[in-house]
Length: 458
Image 1: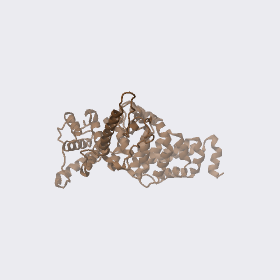
Image 2: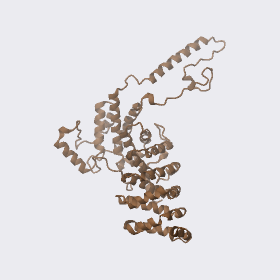
Image 3: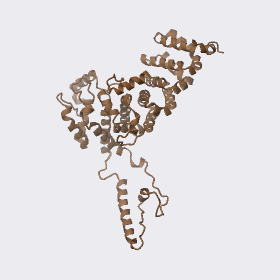
Image 4: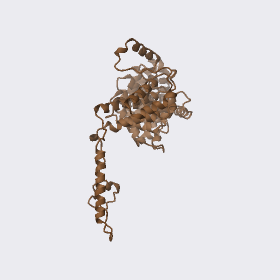
């Protein structure tokens, strides 16, 4: 509950509180990496694969913000390349750099222009053969009146009823033929890719621009001054979640940038924005957003399911998001337990972080997790191995303490009493935590029978 209050106070204060730790600064953002990169450029500039773009120290974002936005909106290759390269370099800089004014609030329309580039690529990303077309209604096609309205009109077989005494039968037939020919032309236009359809090279350029735009948005999400604007921008969230939803067929780098963006925005993200009166562009609902994250959690790509676990762990703290996540809690904790079985330390850290927040706010998860033998064994294995990050081991011990503090779990947790005692006497870092666990399990007056069963095997 304390974590929830901290999260709510941080969101209400508009970012005055200390922001949660990020998943890591972008590559090239530290002073050491920038210095090494500049040294490498000065030593061997001929080894670069392409032309390098440098921004002079006198470059002012405030004076060039309109030029950047107009270049993104123009669609011209040279202008688009210049704007994307400029924003990529600006978004990689540290906050103490002299170009620290490269934030979304100071460049009106920048986020919408970047999202438009991604939307343009997504409009042509899938071939028409793979798209699920709308089914044409044929029921009652031979009837004059069907009741389907516009659906039936799309068939192009409308025949107007002749009016008595006016002799308009021929006129009705002619108008019906005109409507039919018009519809056929429009259907032919929609079936084609258009007059200026792109070849493979043009599609590749569109894809590269979309990936570059998503990378810039991802870099901007690392900056605390951009978090509120991005978390409250419905078009941005809808585009990001749609990329995640189509992770099977979408570009991998584009999906990775999208999942890392929402992980950074998770502490300030309220899923109810998808049902708010704000204008919608893609019609993403709360349920579809959660299902998209669940698809990423079940992915075999380590970077994706680690990011999805971290996102769910941050989202569950917000009480406004909890009702939307509750139907998926059984699937979430089962998948997190599976991730704990992986040998990758970063995957274990992500799963422990998510379970730590999940058991703190959800009683049903505590009950099911304590009754799952594999879950408790794998959490204890993280402590006994131990995990190279001490904070992960501390959170794992706190998860065990949360499970043991629930009265309904004491009987099942007593089966691990010997393991708890072994960790208590062998690991001084967690001795206090496991001492409290053993005290909670065995020293309560109403637990004498349960304690006897645990000790003597009754």
